[in-house]
Amino acid sequence: MNIMSTARDAFKKKILEEMTVDYTDTLQKNFDLAKQFVRVTNDGHVDLLVKEKVGGKDQILLYLIGKMYAKEAGLSPSDDVGNEELERELQIKTGSLLPWLKELRDTNKVKQVRREAHVYHSLPPNQIESTLKLLEKKVKKGS
Image (cartoon, rainbow, N blue to C red; front, side):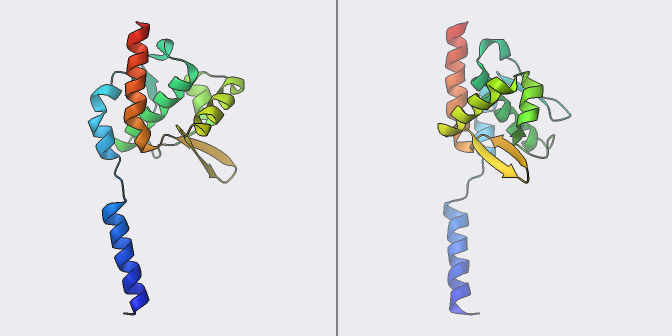
């Protein structure tokens, strides 16, 4: 074994020990809060329980959080969502959806992933708790 591969293996081990994040813990920690807002169906769809109480951007965020739970439960192969799915499931027209997604990306609340000719969106795991807590305040205030 050469010195270069030993150093690389040690660095890889350090990254895995000190920098990796398992967002399952975040999903578990925020489960009770999340279930106030979303449900996941057996076929991996996400239902928003407060759709009429929150605006379009918040609906997108909640849908993405629901998708993370669906993936974790093995009901969805992925936690990222394309524009077509958001339009269809949230019943938001493209003219509203695209500017909201841009604003969410620009404020680092949503990340964009490109695969081939398609664009998908997901919520960074570090945004789950703060997003849910903010939405909880908004919904309580609006009640």
